[in-house]
Structures are given as structure tokens and as C-alpha cells.
Image 1: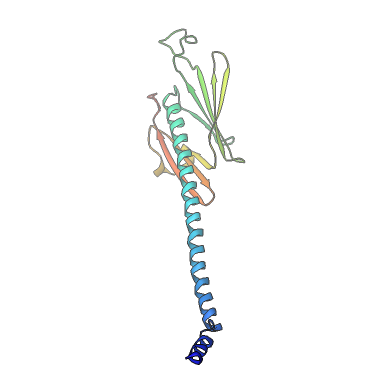
Image 2: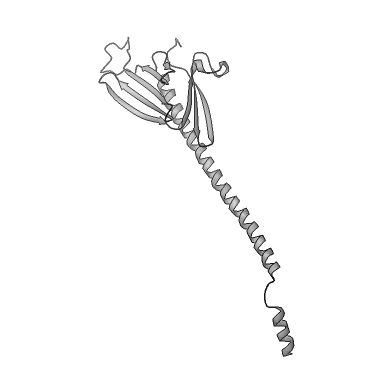
Length: 186
């Protein structure tokens, strides 16, 4: 009986080299699959975050431009050389307006797109006291096109048409704004 136990113990001494190599190969395949899955998860999360950042910047830009253009008392002026949009506004500042029936411009709002930094800034000049307020409206801007630079199918009559393109890493989004100023002559 002792001999049988000794023979049995000698046969059960461990795994063979082939068995260890097969187990190692299977473990390697499983780890490679898990690593790829985790990498893709982080990649998808980053792309989703970039897309949400772009949408947020487009929403903020749309909101500011819509508000300012709707308050314009004349057609906004676009300078394609400096990428600047100038909007004259009459807000009815009672300290500045001498005749309410003949309103004059009391604010000048300027949007400037800096192609080198990809930023869009808004400068508001209050003419009563020459106070200036400068705000960064959007980052990652890769292009702004104004009415004449747009294709005919991207324009609406009697509206101010602006196309904004924002790019962050590999994500790009564009939005065309059709904003009707309160003035009827546009």
C-alpha cells in the first residue's frame, strides 16, 4: 500500500511545461482583451467629454450672439480681415438718451475671433461713460463665417447668418445661426 502511495505521489508532482505554456497563453489573451476594452472605454469617455465641451461652447456662443444681434439698431458689420463683428445697440439707457422718440446707439458690442488662439471674445462698450467689459465667449473655435462667406443654401433672407465651427482634438461640430434683428430694414 505504501508503494502505491509513493508511486501516486511521484506522478502528481506538478504541471507539465506544455500545460503551463497553454495556461500562460490563455491568461495573456484574456489580459490583452481586458486591456483593449479598458483603453477603448477611456477613449470613448474622452471623445464624449470633448463633444460635450464643444456643444457647451456652441450653446454659449449662440446665446450671446442671438441676444446681441436681436438688440441691434442697425445691420451688424462684419470685417473679414480682422474677423470682427460689430453690433450697435440702443438699450434705452435713460441717463444717455435725451429724446426717447429718437433713440441713439448707447452700446457697441464687438465680437472678435482670434485665429491664432481659436478664441471668440466679446467686448461691450457703454458710450455713456466709455466703460468696457471684455468676456471670453468660446475656445476651440476653428472657423467663423459671415453671410457673404456662406453658401446660398445656408442663408435666410432678412436674417443675420453666421456659421461657427468648433474643433477639440478629433471632434468637430458646426452650427449655423439665423438671427433676425429687431430692426425691420434687414
